[in-house]
Length: 511
Ligand SMILES: Cc1cc2nc3c(=O)[nH]c(=O)nc-3n(C[C@H](O)[C@H](O)[C@H](O)COP(=O)(O)OP(=O)(O)OC[C@H]3O[C@@H](n4cnc5c(N)ncnc54)[C@H](O)[C@@H]3O)c2cc1C
Image 1 (spheres, helix red, strand yellow):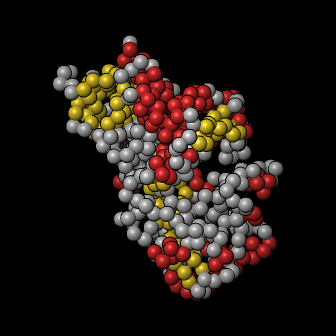
Image 2 (cartoon, rainbow, N blue to C red):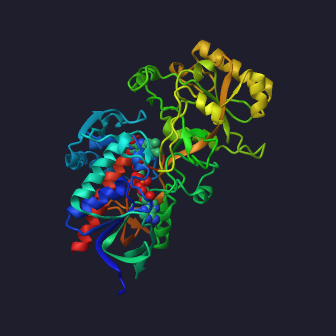
Image 3 (tube, protein in one colour):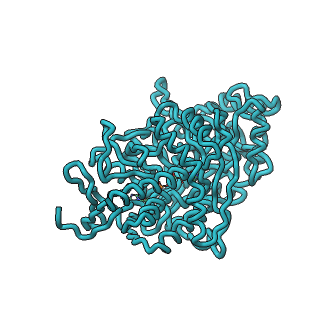
């Protein structure tokens, strides 16, 4: 077809880790590359992340772990390839980091669950970059800074290679001829991609409409980024893609800002250490995860709209599965009785330190959580009640039921035994000292995992398992993780899948 307005070998869509890794790999394989980004600023969800890329020191053991945690939702050849690549990806990242003399560290730290192979894992991350200050230099993002440092490495790598980047240039539609993707429309132009289009547009964190269709619990609030509106999913669908893992998201519970226009993001709660349930004793395991904090005390409990606890508020990997118990539909009462829920702390808990931990990529947001939670009470994100009775009235629960919940919790703290939901004693704090601080709690999505199905070469597949020529997907768009996520797993996919997709498309262009 003629009337192309631009021609490249490979077009990568989305300037997060996956799109950047694909662009670098395609360029280094000899391709002329275009990198497109919809937003005015790069980084997507990637800059909000902790920046830990999971790697492996034993591919066979890693494969066993990935099989367990995917529970049949992802074909084994893909998991095998993922395991092999996790054992090989570190030099790629270290090599990229030479661009700005970043200091890269590798730490060996087991994966989240006590399955076979869990101790084969580590993290690669960027510890520091000379002259770079994540807070000062990335004014549009607020996150865990490790992701920002790693992203700075990618930005400098793109720039050093002279890869053409078009910001504020959303990909709108793929162009396909005779079943083959040959280019796309972006920024109003028809752009030819001789070797293929790599979709790395993230997920659908910013699409409440898609969430309504795929997720039982609702509403769910995006915890970091709103420009990922499922564009890549729709474009791939139009080209004939099958979808997978649409139900699955990396999520937790959290608060909402009292002014959602100023701060439209869900706010995750204080990041406490993860822990691994295990035969050695969970208490011992949690010790291994101490980082910023001297203990793992979680000052809150969570109750439903009837004032009753319903979950272990501190599951092994809270930032991944914390939202799942909220999804239950209460047919007897014809409502989601856990959405919203209520988080409650007493005065000792309130004064311990910040309860909220916002993260976002958004130049219009400036919100930071205060050290003592008082500004958030002032703003109406949190509220206070002087007694359990007053608290019950405020949340619409029966006062006797709420009193019973709190009495039972305090007794469990005294006994060091939460018979109801098995919270670890090391995490338990009683609710004794008024005033009680409380807030509405919602399911929060950090990032989605669903999207187009792909094969080991990142080629997008149709519902019959056939590759759609010219179309690749990378990153969290169609993630491999379909059952239990692994901390650091998404970034591993960004680098492994992005690199492979870029190389594959470059090879097609060169053929
Ligand atoms: C607080 C937080 C902490 C996290 N920590 C970790 C961690 O330590 N390790 C880990 O593995 N994972 C972590 N994650 C998850 C991880 O950050 C993401 O899954 C990953 O960064 C996604 O990368 P990506 O490149 O696929 O998508 P993104 O980084 O979101 O990039 C997608 C880009 O595509 C752009 N885009 C969308 N549509 C279009 C379009 N039509 N045209 C052009 N561009 C478009 C978007 O604007 C965006 O810039 C964390 C997530 C959060 C929220």
